[in-house]
Length: 639
Image 1 (cartoon, rainbow, N blue to C red):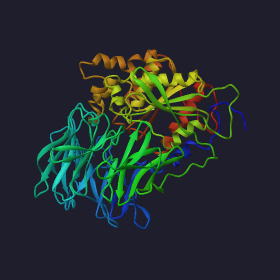
Image 2 (cartoon, rainbow, N blue to C red; image 1 turned 60 degrees about the horizontal axis):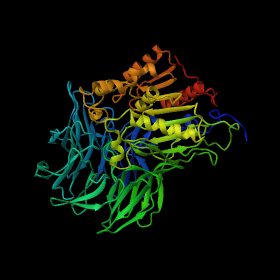
Image 3 (cartoon, one colour; image 1 turned 30 degrees about the vertical axis):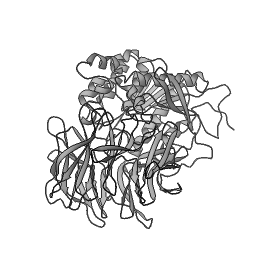
Image 4 (tube, rainbow, N blue to C red; image 1 turned 90 degrees about the vertical axis):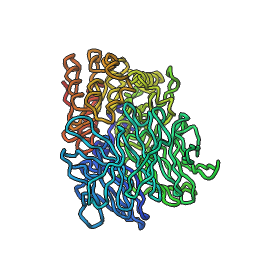
């Protein structure tokens, strides 16, 4: 077996192979008349999102027409960009953000008006009635903050949308009762995010389908409600984290009745619309995904206290679930399998894959599998997944330790997952160790765990990532002189803050990350415009704290090289963040690589940009850590 230094190993998992396997299932699953629908985000087609239908006969075909892009920009993160009823698809087109009616064999017909401001009227999360649908609309104005509301739209687009509910800062999850007589929905208001506190409302519908006299069912500023759903019998169910975990309840008149209490989360943070983690089965039971500290499981909840568990079809399950009779459909992945559209027999737990990304063509034993590890912190245990270097074609020189990449996930109210990630295996197959950290503030461990980040963003996350890296190095599993940290968005902020406020890391990679917190608060989109009130503190009272926590204002403390990667169409973290950080670092003599990507927003979707970003980052680590990457990798420019 050839002996070669870590980082120099030749790997079949090239950047191009990563993009070929980079097909993502990017939205909700839907069932309609025995057909299953999903959305594919395709890097090789410019990153466009396509609704796909699998018919009862198993035949698979695109619903979104050629050149179309089914994606909504409500909240910028979108989700629930389409729905299906009676074989007709209602979908948001990314280019103009109008809602279209798509019927097989016919040209899509817009059912919402052309906005005065390009893409200024945006739609998401629709529920379909007999002759109209109700959905979330985000209305962008020439000046001031966008307006979010619920609107009723005729299915044929014969008249203008009519506002059905307004007055709150945010709306989500409009859900019609089976007899179309009631509507349930969620609201929340600044400064809350939906995981801080939401309110669940119900109203009777009049003859015109308009809600009247809404009543509050559950929730408030400090209770998060997730996924309101009507049972086939017309009983409203939902998840609440009133116990510290997102558990399942039902509304029995004016009484809230627990359905399934467990030390585990059924809910997830509502970053996107349409998230779902439970569904009603044909026999009257409920299937729920439960994320507990020990892992994932599927609970089948019957009458009374009858609960049985079936094996989860993977170690990572996407935030969408639907059931057709006795079959559940999920997005499932595991350490050796990409996230795939998966069918599960609810009676037996037997699973089969219906659609998956192109497999990686790698030798047996090439994939690094995660090991869950825990680290001591002043707040209690912090969790992470450790991936050792793995390539059966190479071994490292005796006594050499691998470089370590610490991953700081985005959000920051989010979590790691253990599904096969070709982008992660790109690194481990070249001889890097990878540590994916669920720092304090991450979800999936109960409300108390993610509330560790209340007012402490830039402190707790940085502390946990640095401590985790140090403990891995101390255990002899990584080279303490070659520790790097990388992350995107909020994870980019944690990356930059870790470089400014600790001396643990020798390099960092910030993907569309935040350098100036005050600038973020002033220029980010509405959905997150008050998120920092909770993460850092309200302005202007906390202005000095914003400055203290911002890596840009402490760029003189950063002494190690950095690579900054930024999309020029980013509306969440504007390009100015990377530009100002690069200038400040260069002024201090710090080596910086600053790459900008035309046409990319908050995350890179086009294959050519994903390839360029991966290869540039690999070249960057080679220059910093003193190795020559295998393959034809263009050297990154640094200044």
